[in-house]
Image (cartoon, rainbow, N blue to C red; front, top):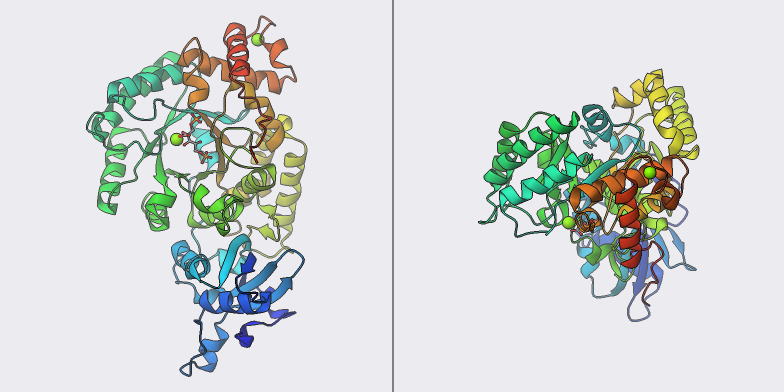
Length: 493
Ligand code: CAP
Ligand code: MG
Ligand code: MG
């Protein structure tokens, strides 16, 4: 055992100089949690599996500290002096330390990073989001509902014009936001540049017909950064400012791609798609980190929005304990994780402005989404909102939860009640393009379902009240109920 890393009860770790982590740990060969966690702390900070004679008192002070062990839950708490991380705000580097070699150690049977806490002093070293959901709301002039989005399906195989036509159909139906699907890139049957140009034409038509602005999120993930930047620049030349977002497959492209886009294009909504995360976030995975942890790092890296899951309501694995918490970590000034409270303000709690913001935001969150649009407008007139929004040196800007994956009009009320807010983006692919009357009707059913929720009506009442899109919603209710895409799925054991 490397005893120097075990410092149970050490209170220094709360002095703002340490990033705190909670790991679930199991080890092979009957090793105690002390032994296993001392090796994890060494390997994830300044050490290895053997004590070396080449260290110095300073290098020793840069070691991680195991400051608490909970034998009941097999949870170990490890504090990292954040000075060891690459200066200049590299999230990739933090994860290489704490979510790197430790997952490969032969003595460890499970090592899952359950939660992480960044001290306020550390937050100032990282970019955080620049262009936020509030900026997108302002561009779209949409405050009283989630941003209603779609993903064009089939996922791949359409030509650029066929793709753009479906964007038009969704936007013409009243939808706000369309994203490329995560694998869509530069395929020979839908070359990237012709897709972008076709989308611009479709967007112009839809804006003429509806009188409302629209946004499209283009996937700029690519083989190399030069190509990624070429695609981003092509989009900027073709689209109007504010009308586009950059989607990056953050897990398969990597954190450096995320931060490169954040730094080169601070005036663009950075859409973090997390395809591949299930390999290490699912409960069944003994190694990796959780969805709330991934979400926290995405906010630190500067994602304007990240997919945070549907809390098990849609088609993907997930739970309220993880996905609702992840949504709060993404978007709130203060959020409670499974092991730590995280405050995203870079000033101490004693700052009265921060307390006012926290109080007003808590009121908004707890008063539920129906009042959110009113409260958000009031808040935007309140002085302290300007502190949150304008002087981001006090706060790390928010990241928008993107709630997607098997969502359809029938599930919207359940989503809204589960997340208790309208301040997110939701995207529906199958849930709009499979509507028996087609994409536009699918979109109208989405609008009608949200309006039902907002008015406190059941879907049955809303689809027979002679207001809005009764038929489209009724057909959606019949179709999706038959499809058994109800919220309460029975989990396979
Ligand atoms: C949703 C989706 C998104 C998932 C990603 C898909 O399509 O486009 O990539 O939402 O999952 O390809 O499955 P549907 P998550 O609306 O047709 O399901 O949001 O959990 O990261
Ligand atoms: Mg997709
Ligand atoms: Mg109606």
